[in-house]
Image 1 (tube, rainbow, N blue to C red):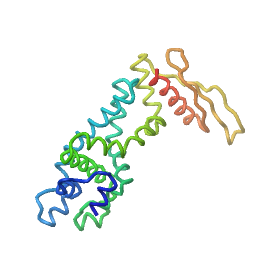
Image 2: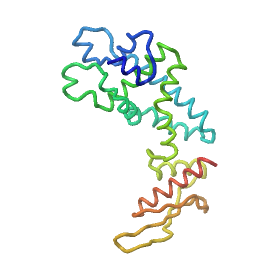
Image 3: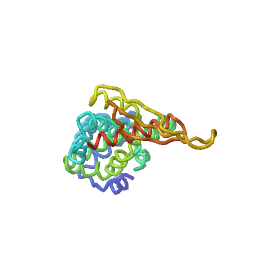
Image 4: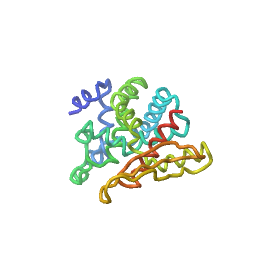
Length: 226
């Protein structure tokens, strides 16, 4: 089973014990009277991931300021993001769980998937060094990172725009309905968002709330790329 995992991540361990430790849950180690589980590796893996993601964002997104970089890094090392990467690997099927934890569906818990992914990254780092860990992580994550940034698919656009306009202009964004089109039951709203009297973006939507989100998204893309 673990050889299949190595094939999936395109990395073969010199020390297979590190891989075993990385996928071993405390419940399993307690049942089997083992003195190791993934938890110490998870501690290291979190730091390694932070560095890899920080380095990638700094190199590839040169127009982003420190606030934007921090926002994205926070998401790309979050449980929400990493658990999806782990699920795509079917990582839960390789985790060694105690009977009770397995029966409760532990292998599908986002928190566990995130922790095991972090421990796996640490195991690769200890086995093969930073460059090997970076290669595996970026191979698994870079497309999703770039897609997420391109689509701004995880953020509340209005909240992030408010933060950004307060920082750049020391004011809040203002939204204005430009037009309402279509019959009463199927309207399409067009909304503009502005700061300091300058329009930053437009958005359309079937509700004012959605149009405002889309307008804020357009404004964010403009401001981030300036």
